[in-house]
Length: 637
Image 1 (tube, rainbow, N blue to C red):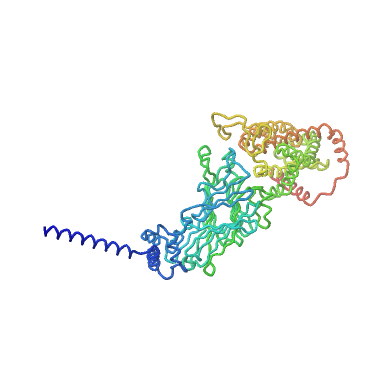
Image 2 (image 1 turned 60 degrees about the vertical axis):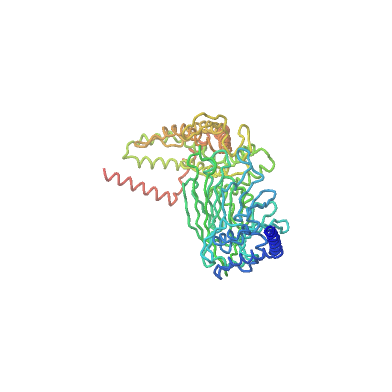
């Protein structure tokens, strides 16, 4: 009985002792505030392990612990992040590190900026669609990147595209302002600043820093890397790619890279702006002050137009940035929008209109001061762009009709003189008499007041117009996705039949406007063949038969036209079709109602009776040279 009593008392004692110990631990456990303080001290210990030069200034440890950086319940995880990012581990502990995006938007464009990298990840053109009626994005699905690479004070190499920025959206009047800050403390950061104005494609962009000289090694150059793979947005990949190229303004001088080159690379100085151009849309980075230097790269991504149908070019720009007084301070602009001459030329003093492919020299001048104003005037009160092109063609042909008249007049004069020139050719046969034959022919032409070159001059005058229009229509965004008759898009080919096979140099479709233009060219050349033969001197011994060559050209030119323009803009083929029809009509009117060959013959005979005008110095030198050559031939005999 005594043993049982002892066991019971012992049990009661142990229970009481356990209760006392539980009560003691419960009443003495740390409060939540004490736990947070301990975690903050652990974070501070990790920061103190860094060298004093790279410790972030003004680090508020209590705020960092309260925001639970990188799973603050696990100090080991934060220490690993600290070892990887150094002072920039602070940004990884902010709420923005969980991801997220911010949108800037106006009537024209919607721009999405991601917390990761602080960069633009989407640009939507709100007023345009792709050729297959889908939303048109310049940037989407990681086809572009804007990254700043730099070295830290503790010898790390970091890139902003891998780090998280804290967004802050505000307004400046009617402007939307987005500040993206990559922080190393509450008050020290690297900032990407975007500002979007109403009804504008241009975006103000700045890269600035505050108190970053203790985190970033500002004695070394930082590298701004801008890359973009341009989307295919138009019907013909091949045609679009021909007008997709990298363009830039260097020290006020415009330059561009070859659109058809597989890869092109340029080292440039004093860069004003660089444009990653598509056929009808472009991305431009502009410096408020010139970039001191840059490396620009363009790569062709279309190796096979049947397979490579998503992207056309890959563009890269590497621009060194230099800190001043330990800080970055670069003011720039970004343009994401259409390659529209009216829009781009509205930004005065920047020469952005050079992005529009209007040709060079006189061709660009004709487009800029003639065709763009005429087209703009006609389209201001006519909604159908096909009709505008036809009216524009009529205006051009009427303006050029005096040139056609001069050509026909020269042809008629040469036709009247042809019998006399034939007599000279018969009189002085043989190679040994070639010089004498040429002298007498030129003499009779001069006496009759006929210039054999006058028939060539009109053709030379029309060539700049031809090449200017060849550039004008493919660069005119106004006609994009506007139809006429069977063509649903005047900026693309007018397919009327799709072929189950592909013809080399022609394609897998049949376009009707190029066929009509080719037929018109054939009849035009048939009409002008007789005109050219009238102007041609009789075939001389040992010289090629020009008549046969002209007949070959009469067949070759229309076929070449049909093949060459089959995949080109239907607006261009429409212009040439209407232009050749009008030229044929004008030629018929001149031939049957204006030029009278009998009067021309009488005038030539009258000119022959007049005393010959004094020769010009050039004519005299030419005659003297021919006379000397003839004398030398006689001596050799």
